[in-house]
Image (cartoon, rainbow over all chains, first blue to last red):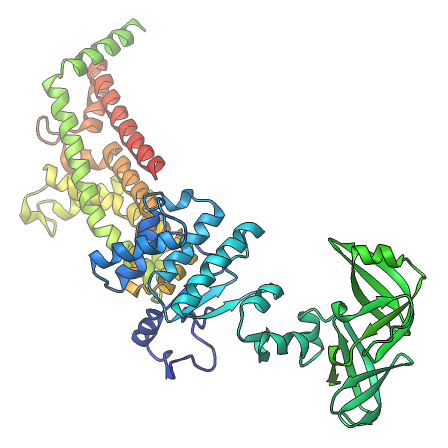
Length: 314
Length: 229
């Protein structure tokens, strides 16, 4: 994020902005920085009034006085900060301060906005509110945004395109759907919340479909693999249905097993099932009670062919 | 004891009757110290900023040397200035020795290290995130420096106040290069020293009280400004 924001120089490679390498001189870096704005991970407000904090980006760009006043007041209103202009910035609460930090970045109408975990240090309520306001502005003004986040659901909710960075390298990029359902390797799979990742061997191939042997059981999945290939089978816990008898639905995989543990997690229950290999499923608390799920109970775990993602073992 | 008490009572009489001699000495003290602080500020604040924002070989060493001079004895600076401006010295032709002007120069030299060093540490005390935030919002190098200086303003002000405190309270240099000439270069500290040795408690007390009041007033103003932030 710091390299993208042209605050740090890359030790290798370059940063292209609109196709132009902007890392070559300080002058180019400054020009490029003035077309973007960043909300850094640890944002700090300058020790002056809210107005002075918000206006500084415009001042530095040499915007004339009359216009700046109008722009600042407009953005303060959008960020629900009307009446805060004269307040000393350091006396604001966390949520208010964060809104000022974002207003300060948005007021310059950047072509590119960098957000580094903009809501990381806020309570969930303030975070949700800020997200709502900021993204409505971003969508309206059509600003390109690069956001760093550890919050999977936030990423899924907001992003058109997701890149997974691991050890300083982009290991996968694509739409939210792609990244979350078709991770390229075990680490990405674990990272995006694929809780069931099991080793298997392709036992049979049948025109786009494969049968994978996992822990002595057979799982049908979609994939283009050769027989005998070692693979990883990934199933999201929320895609598994638990029942007491074999379901006669379109789902081709229905494995019987025994409940090995049940854990409450808010309104849902996580259930560990041993069906030759360990699996985790999710059910609502209500259905857990209705099914009488408890340790040792025999159940069927059913999942569709399309909800299984098979990765070639590396 | 009664002699001391009487001295103290007489001292307040001198102060509240605005005794011309007392007022003249206090006025000169203030004028010399304020002028020397102004000169030192004009030189040290930009220089401190320059040293802080530029990186150059020997920077660390330079800062260490500056810090060493924080505690330079006033008489050592006095000696240096005396030699410099004495009749046979390099600047002897200016005929400035034993004038208020040379006292200003001496005091400015005396407090420059402490003001320079404190300015540098005031600027280093500004969090890196301030610099990052300014740059990420499109500030040029120069604009970023201004932001950092604005953030450090209270700490820089403390440097100025400390310089003033050292200037108005020092005695060795004022004696050596000023000469303690009555009505011309006699300041609070040199006068207190003289009156004490002469046994004029009242005058010494009166001047001492004024010196303390000045110090108190300066600190109160600084505190008030800092609390207003």
